[in-house]
Image (cartoon, rainbow, N blue to C red):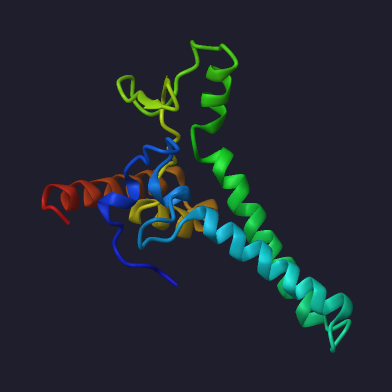
Amino acid sequence: RLRGPVEKIETEIDSRTGMKNYIANENGNWATSAAYLRYSFARSIHYGRLYTSGSKKGNEDDLCEALRCLGQALHTMEDFSAHSNYCELALRELGYHSVLPHCGAHTEIHLHGKRVYPLVTGTFGAVDFLHSVIGEASDHFTQSEVDEVDIALKNAEGASNRSGG
């Protein structure tokens, strides 16, 4: 299920947490990663309990759904450290100030009496989607064919950005 366009406010930094709004700010009308985690874990627990002690105890469908929901929650948690600058910011907090914050040199914000860099994540746009879709197929392409697709995707994205789309 795909969602509609991302609103600018979703990607703005929450001044209370230093994170982008879509990560954990639930004061707006957008989906958040934090809410998705709570939903996924709660659903996993629910179906796990049905499997172990529900009226249809031992129902394989309940176990499968419990494990699927657990997997989606754990995957979301993995993505937090894998696709954000969390590790870099943690290293900077530990005194490793030569580590790049990966959010721009002049993006520090005031947060709880300190100047810190915001916690940001990458985005997953149309080009990323196409790369993920053709990723498996690229095993069967020659490198020059993959390069051609890469160039075409970048050109299409550039044209879209120039036209405001």
